[in-house]
Length: 266
Image (cartoon, one colour):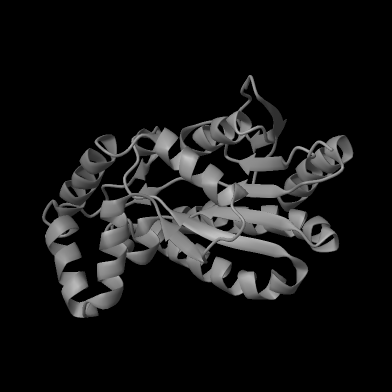
């Protein structure tokens, strides 16, 4: 008897890591739906328009998938963006929007799929976090906060849904060469007061990103997490970043913080 094809929904799948995840999952024989605000033609996936900050829109997207397929096995949450600037000078509207997209965008998608997954006693949720969630980056504070919050959210949610066969995991990419870099909303406000450190920090980060790993590597990793039998609460992409995150857990916090200062805040 042939196995039924798994069905996945990817948020933010129109570009970057999300697009790479869409391609990787479809190549593995998964039926893939993608939702984002931007209309995009995908050869091996179905685009459904949706804004992750709109709870009702995410519910409609999930309902559409269920109407068409009768099941939803995998949710991959990739939608997100970054802002940079000094905390002292960052407009709170921008900071709140960062959390609205990166954190509550995931919350809206997860809330929409959980009733179905829980009733079927099966489902996999993969949330794209960041190494910045484990090692916060100065002058990208609110982005780091949003990703650290996702790590905590995933860790707690895992135990809430454990009895229902639903598994949740966070994946932490490091520097990835995608359009995320150019899309970053940069605020130079206060750079004169901070002695040019804001611009230097962001420039260093963007250089690292442009020289980072290809998004296809992240897409393949997400595919692996989506399809394997068991998953950890969080995992990091790339050996060098795995080592960094491990060291950050083992070394004294003061030392880790000092090293990050030397790299991104001096």
